[in-house]
Image (cartoon, rainbow, N blue to C red; front, side, top):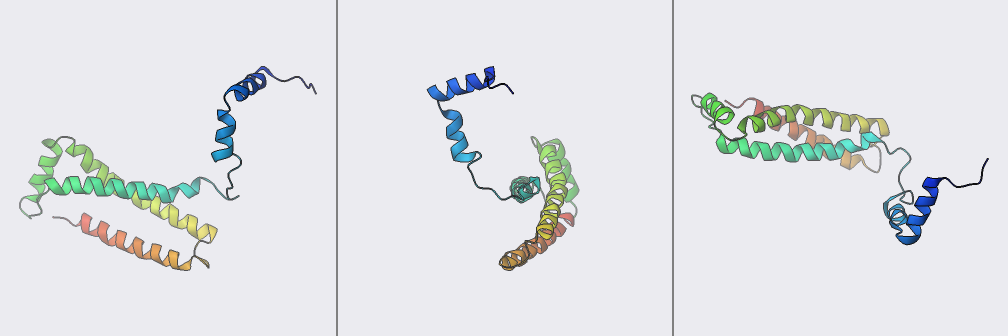
Length: 148
């Protein structure tokens, strides 16, 4: 093997001597940062569920401001949201499809917890709180689906 350094390595070392930004990043959040061995993409689904919850709340508030919950006027108010309200069609479709995506993300999050044993001690109370949140989510989704 050759002990001669590549051009890229020389450029990196030259840059590090003058402006050690790469080593700063490496020591603050890089390879020196302790992380669990089983860290993978499945750990992102909790954050995705939180993000989708925020999207659902924001679009739900927007839709509630323009919706009329009366049996004879509900359809007309949805038509008005879709046609007359600026970006109302986008908010309605984000809310409708976001609900499905939200439940998919939450179910993947639950299955990840089952696979990695997150329901075991010392986290069993946290698991039961999550189950209660899931039941509240299902009740809220049911109430949204049965609007007149």
